[in-house]
Image: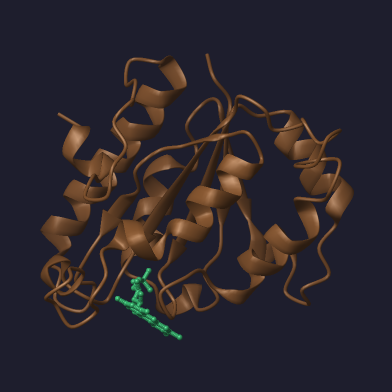
Length: 195
Ligand SMILES: Cc1cc2nc3c(=O)[nH]c(=O)nc-3n(C[C@H](O)[C@H](O)[C@H](O)COP(=O)(O)O)c2cc1C
């Protein structure tokens, strides 16, 4: 059984509809460690050694957050800046993360259609996530296509329940290795690979 570390970053959790529900669906599953960064580090003083130890103890790393300004909330960026140290995560001696899997789980206000060359945001989600792809790659991890919930402003509770159920299937499938994802590419979402 693979061990999964969910790095959850939501600065306004009290207002959350989508990620609150996604979080609730996976939080108590065996094999998953839920690391709520804004709860743990409200002052932004990240315990780098604790976070690196957690990384070493897990096989699959999930960056779970609402999409903020086409990227992640500030504390997750701080986490990346501090925790993925030279000679730990990258560099000649930096092999701590080698062979692990990384995946982004995000929600966006924008609908799927606006994330395209001809849409209002001009780029696809996968293009916006290029820094995460390359960060994982530099750290010798395999970056899977993202799991995305679009259109947060108009989404119904029934739709949220379906996403929550799919998120649970995704993490348990990755944990048990019943979901093996080899496909990568600019338009791929992991959502499409869940039955
Ligand atoms: C500061 C801020 C920046 C945001 N930036 C984006 C963005 O770049 N693209 C987008 O589609 N939605 C953006 N949104 C909308 C959020 O992604 C959306 O509210 C969130 O995914 C809803 O999830 P929740 O119900 O868990 O809060 C932004 C929201 C805030 C507050």
